[in-house]
Amino acid sequence: MNIAGKTAFVTGAASGLGAETARALSGRGARVALFDRNATAGEAVAGELGGRFFAVDVADAGSAEQAVQAAMAVLGPPSVLVNCAGIGTAARIVGRDGPMSLSAFETVIRVNLIGSFNMLRLSAHAMSLSEPDANGQRGVIISTASVAAFEGQVGQAAYAASKGGIVSLTLPAAREFARFGIRVLAIAPGLFLTPLLAGLPPETQDGLASSIPNPPRLGRPEEFAALVLSMIENDYLNGEVVRLDGALRMAAK
Picture 1 (spheres, rainbow, N blue to C red):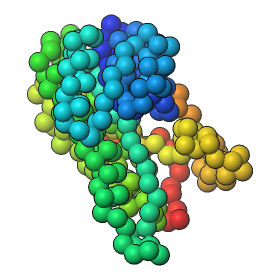
Picture 2: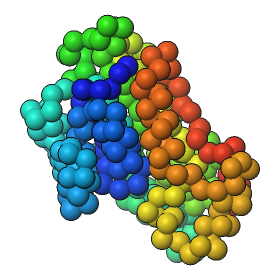
Picture 3: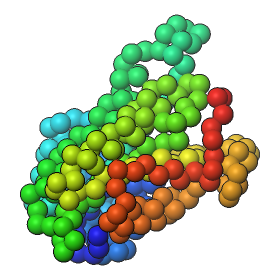
């Protein structure tokens, strides 16, 4: 699919992987709708790109429905959705103070998994009603999983479960949407230099990078964005989860 002149939705677009993905899509000529809870940062990125920002809580049905409708009214129906919105938490299931708070687990599941599904269902419906391109394609949906979906560490139960759900969602969604010409994919990043990791001391960053076989460094957001572009452009890539991790395999701790 050629993204030039088409509308792309990006969640979590105010910073990190989402912001860099929005920049890459805009650079290829897409009309980009940036979705995030952080209006100040989101408006700044949108202004930089000439895109449009829409405040949203991806885990809330009403908020997402309103934001998607507002974006379509301005930019038209999406041909691409990239789900980058997500949160992480570190907590043992049973810690020194007893069992993990159920609400803490639920919050991560709601934002990462339910939020991705929420935007997927709304965007896929909009795509299904649009006209196909010359190759019979109507859209591409790419969600962000994690290597934690496969090698979740101690303390990552909620995060790993949420990302494992995204992995498991990818194939059945791709099969269901095949009749519409909508492809569904996911990227499972390893350790990336996002704002969270960038705030760590240099020696901590170096320690994390030393665990990555090749190249022995943290991933760069532009490398994530480059994979997004490649996935969009390759019509035969569908129903797949692609690890982007420098051959990293996470240890138990």
